[in-house]
Amino acid sequence: MAREGERSERGGERGDRGRGRRDRNEDREQSEIVDKLVAINRVAKVVKGGKNFAFAALVVVGDQKGRIGYGHGKAREVPEAIRKATEEAKKSMVRVPLREGRTLHHDTHGRWGAGKVIMRSAPAGTGVIAGGPMRAVFDVLGIRDVVAKSTGSSNPYNMVRATVDALKRQASPRQIASKRGLKVQDIIARRTDGSGNAEVA
Image (tube, rainbow, N blue to C red; front, top):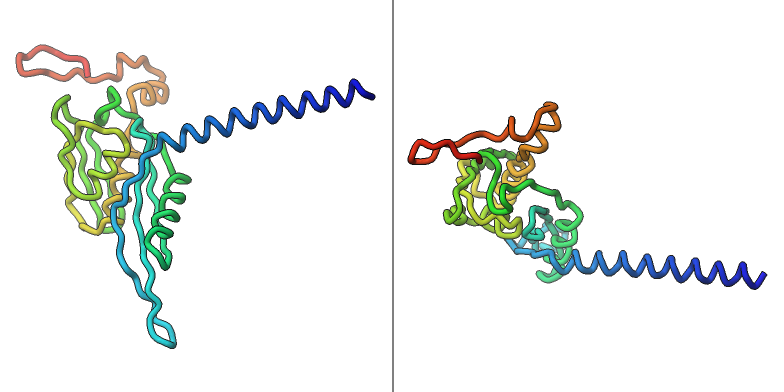
């Protein structure tokens, strides 16, 4: 009986140790996440006695290594609205394949409601050529070279959602190769530089 008790205690210790390791990994992931406040506005609800004012916040989060999420929060106070938006954004994070960890694999476009965006991959040193909400998304995602343009609504909510929609359309050569049953080398496009030499993308 004593041995069984010792075993159960040891098993409990191992379980606690494993749980502690998981918690540490989660804490490390949380600490690596960067968040940016994109927009905050005051909203009003008309009730019988007058108006109830609150604040709505739009936040984007990312690990600057290819993961992105966005969230919307509403509360009576600004800090609480931002906290709610950040929590929602962390739950909705998705992974986006990046080329060399700095730019897009291919040109793409996205749409959400009246928001329309166009994004193009760019060579090293170009920088982030984008404005407003799109720049915030690229910063937390970790993209360093991109050319982007919004051709629709300037509403930050529609722009962020359209940008994330475009990023979800990204596919790496490895993903395409596995779908088509080909080699990665067969998928990678050859680009021509200024001298006319073929350059592997």
